[in-house]
Image (cartoon, rainbow, N blue to C red; front, side, top):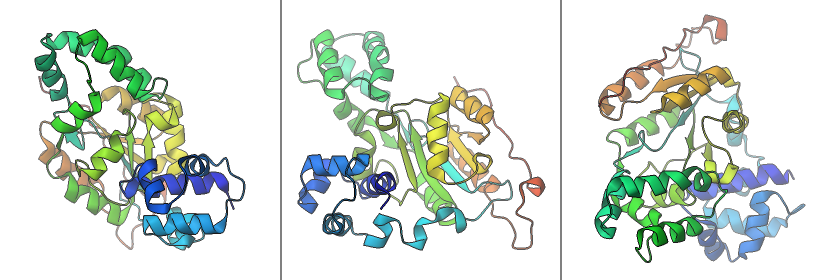
Length: 304
């Protein structure tokens, strides 16, 4: 059994089910340390009875979890768009959700400090937390102490104020029916699972979820795109990144991905354009990269 591959499939299936590690432990009856070690690939040849318990708790087949199910061999069954795309990664903040910045406004109101003071503290530590270099509870303590707001938890404010981007449920379901699909986000620990649970982001069967706090890398670093390419199981020229950050898009483009700038102020227009450029190839059309039309790169000025 491939322990690393098993750990990756287990992690993706758990997140798709909207479960934390603790939640899966409760459903499966496993200890936290055992589950965490299996996800890390640190247990050599874990018991098949243990894997059966996990698969049952997740509601998936044993074959799928251990990787013998043909449905896991994504690269052999995916469609390819006219523009040569077979896998699509979506950013979260600014693409799948919006108004997350309202959390800063609410914190400022509760602590009586200007919003720029709150933002300054947040952005000073944000990359450390999102990369997993700092524990989120450590960050919350620093945040609370600096703002003199006991019990402050950033994730609570974030989850209360964030809103789903209109139209994305339908778009992601459509994309997932045709291509490989994943999430690629610079984000604090636990937020993706929480948003899946409260359905702030579409709860579909993602083929890959690249959470910066778990892979210890951030966009626009090359390492982030390298990890995401490996998990997409296809050539990087077949991957499309949908993001609202120019820096991330330019880095992905330089890495060899296709890119699309998402306008969160006009989501309907962006969604229509995404559907257009992800139109599947005709059955009679050639699937070779040489004959696929190039994907336009959209870097329009951001609205003020």
